[in-house]
Length: 240
Ligand code: ADE
Image 1 (cartoon, rainbow, N blue to C red):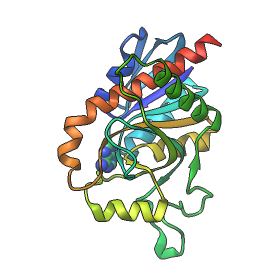
Image 2 (cartoon, rainbow, N blue to C red):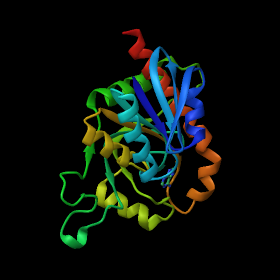
Image 3 (cartoon, rainbow, N blue to C red):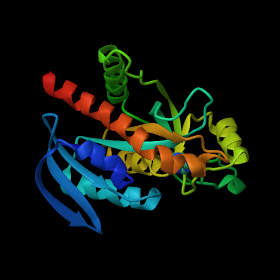
């Protein structure tokens, strides 16, 4: 079974479209939808915004459904001039930019007393996600827009990033491509439970002064793009 976690209903609705439902269960106020999507057994959920909801959801998925893979899918703010609205970032690794015990001599993002700072995603899964995007680009109708995709670091924190200063800091410290509010929490849960995972995000805003205007306007376009990639990825798995 594959677990799919989104923060917002807009992000999951796109993915659930076409899912053959097979029941739902609720734990701690989060609904888990079971069913088949593109030939794969899926459990998916809208966790809510932020690292705590994301961790509650991921840990519940692990304990109740035993997925052999968890994907976190949704939107993110861009930290790179090369990434515009609807472009995609596949995380190679994730780090919590607001985990700060630097006063005790640790680097930003390091979790005191653990070996956790940057958490790598599954190489196999990110390669397959990237291939799915290349295939979608090759297959696209004449005039259809190519999906641009980069692989790199995604930072997560309980903050909506909307200033040039904060954005620059995240780039300088972490060399990150995108920022969001759940991925690194899901990564940590998967890491401690030894569950393979990956995070795929489409850009909804530029994480600077314009972000609060761009985000509501572009969240749906961005969510559509990430859902398209996930469906192609699942179809490819089913075709093997
Ligand atoms: N998700 C989408 N855009 C974001 C931003 N600018 N900051 C944090 N999370 C986001």
